[in-house]
Image 1 (tube, rainbow, N blue to C red):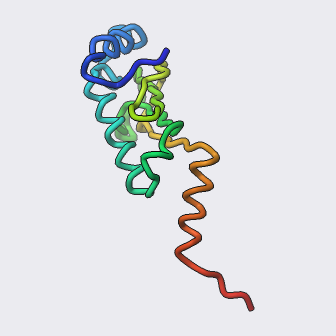
Image 2 (cartoon, rainbow, N blue to C red):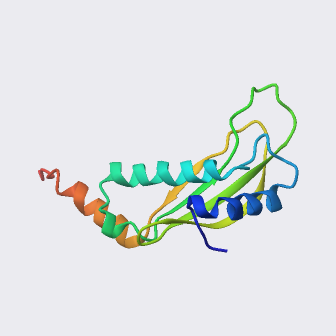
Length: 133
């Protein structure tokens, strides 16, 4: 699956989410706007990290829906894990899976390519020097 995250594909993204989630909506990604906001959030993170637009292709966000519950919560909740991939100019929904949460919250994991990691580490190291004894 590879669906461009764009307003023109909102129906296709929501159909994919419905197919995976079934009737679960409360703790799951169920609307296109949630995926669109994910893409905007991770694009902002890449900006904050200082990764140039030309080097962003290949970055991935794996995000599991759901907020944390009180310690007294004993049940399990149906959630969604969505994976989006940065293309040359746009984000693409590439995977959607059902997830099970208990009291813990969902989480986000930004995954960079080796080249992106090397670029950012070199950029950071250029900002300081190390004193040798």
